[in-house]
Image (cartoon, rainbow, N blue to C red; front, top):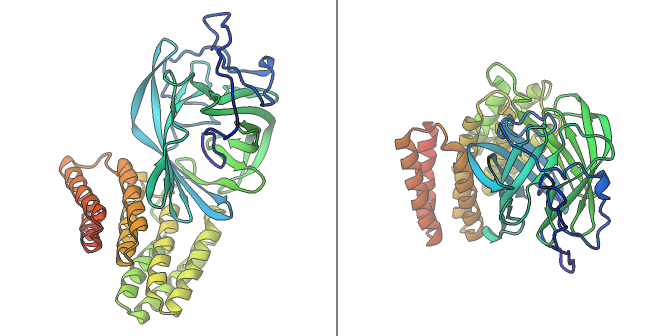
Length: 436
């Protein structure tokens, strides 16, 4: 489990891997843990071997993995802006564990630090017959300077250790469970601290939240809250935070996208093009229209954590245009468009919004190619590759083939550091997705 605190190997920590004797075939063998203040086994609620008759139908309200199409979280890590997109993918996977073949959901986690790809993971979840939700592992990719740096944190139930409970069916104060339980590789132990919490949700108060404390392999702890219909809601270690900004379908609403939001999105595209052409009068007029539209939009139901971020992005855009700074204006236009797309999640299908995000990253790649920023372009390409996993669903086969071919050509150009070709291919891809 990621979020703010790494659950990968901590230097200097040695954990015993000796498996304790199993007194019953219905009990999950437990690894030994040393040098950590773990709870007594009597407090544990995750020791019995679960059964999985309908594992991909997750009905647990505190971890609604099968019904969360898209989740956006925001926060700070090391004083830097942190953003996470979590998307339920359409396919499932079969994992062998404890003599069972379990079909699991696949959820994609994409984290950005200061606007750049930071971590991607594919998480595997299933609900047991008693209503508890279990974590079957994750494929993790950590990034640095636009490249995969390592895969620390990757694990798989049945191959590396046991599956692990990530949410009890009916949590009670004092319950203890381990969402990751392979000491020396990944380890987390959770203690439920409070029930019946009222949480400050994206659009108003949420009743029935729970608060937990999570112990990590290096001995550090984090506080987390979970909310019905949202799942993991807030993570904090006292310095860094990651908070849920919006989730759909929980926060979805009927009707078309408000005109104010459309004006902001269209204006961002206008400023991007106008700044590229140094047409500052056109850019200034667009910013004025966007500012007026935002004054109207902010009076409505804008999720509380997104509102200040979009306001700051609009301020930065106005300053860049006033300064006639083409590069800063184009970057700010991309940032404004990103937050505008997030708001549109409440009104539009998730795949449509992800196609818009794909287009924005193509625009980002063009901007980075113009600056001959090799690391930036490489990171943009990787980001596009992972978002592609989300937009191919439902796409016609011929269109998917055309998109995949263009992405392969883009990869070649990026590998060859041919920035001009990369920008041209990106533009062709933008034209393609514009028709979707």
